[in-house]
Length: 127
Figure 1: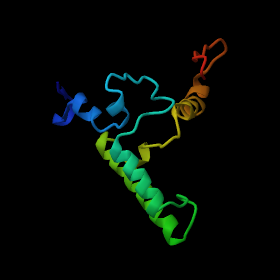
Figure 2: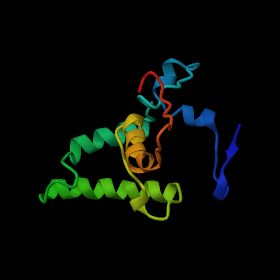
Figure 3: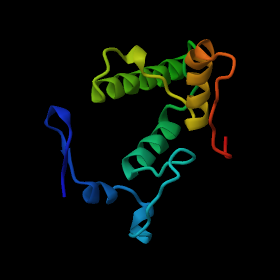
Figure 4: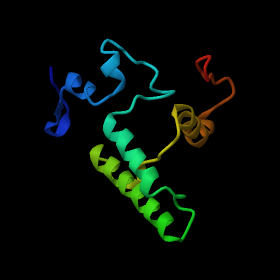
């Protein structure tokens, strides 16, 4: 089974599952809790481990070589994400820790200015 996206991109979801270690022992797992903790493909696990082994330092917080390297890697990945999703600029990409942080950021930056007396905000019990 293949799916087609814009720009001629296709992908096979069954093939992609092979990259996620969690599915090796649980082939029938259907994971719907990605807003809390997403499963990571082995490439991400390896890249994060490599970063911690080689380049772990504060991003945008230091002028020493390791911090500069970490910042360059961080910003380089922001550019890759922007290109992948066809953003106009990497400045449109905001990295957050989780869905709650993302929702709060949107709510406080865009939502509050649009709220009026009597407006309703709907949240799940988990938020």
